[in-house]
Image 1 (cartoon, rainbow over the protein chains, first blue to last red):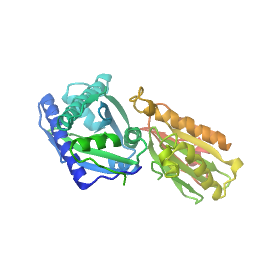
Image 2: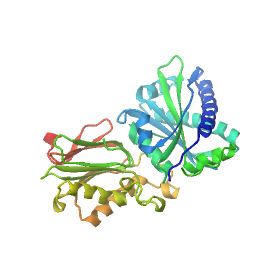
Image 3: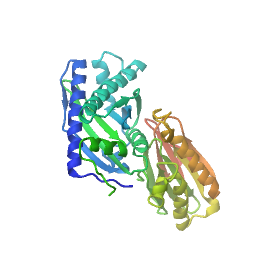
Image 4: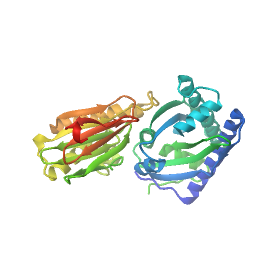
Length: 201
Length: 165
């Protein structure tokens, strides 16, 4: 089944992403004691293959942190760090990026950002979210993004991505932050915002 | 470039079919080196859901194998010479292990693809599957060489002569 979303619905989701990522950036900023800049989020509803292409150079080696979300809706929060960005962030936290502790620290950053983000979404929609433990993987960008999108999209070929870039001021570290709800999850969020009634296209 | 859920076949010398960054997806190559025909399918999921029958056969292992086989045979490949190579089916993340349908899609993709190949009587001549690493598959149509590369690694030949890889 192919889904389509109206402009109004996409705008509402963009606003949710805006508030969610603002909250996440504030959490990161207070942890690092530095300003964190957030750009205006993008909302994309596109085919899975297009979504993988849009993520960036497919063979680029990156570190991905995922935070699966359960509860009233299912979703995955995915953060993509360039290898340099991951190193910089680990150093800001005072840990060695090449060690298990470094990986664990990135996972923890993912945890804090992801839970802040979905906490804000929960406040606005009245939905209860339960974050699962974060996982990290360093691999090809396309492999990471596809491995998140395929199980999330299930039988629908449309992936809905809410993505934002965060940049830590005064450090060479920016990364992308994506919220990827399942198709059912998106419907539920829209319903709670009073913008439901998404029929099949 | 063969993207997720797509498949391609060719008999043009000089063509190289590529799927970059296979995670849980499977890159299935079918080649008949004797006539220089090769095909590649980028399979996403193991089984066609009931609601999707006939919509996107290249996306699902149970239909992609037949589709790709038809494509290479129509380009002049001879069925008894066709060999298969499987790449991908990794488990990048462990999430969803208790969650039914999400359970290890990579492994299910691989087993469903193997079953479909067995049903068609196509031998599997090489592969690089499972594990937790992303992979890129390349099929050099003219020579029938199939290579795999893991993230940060080098191309390795799975089928055909390494020299021309």
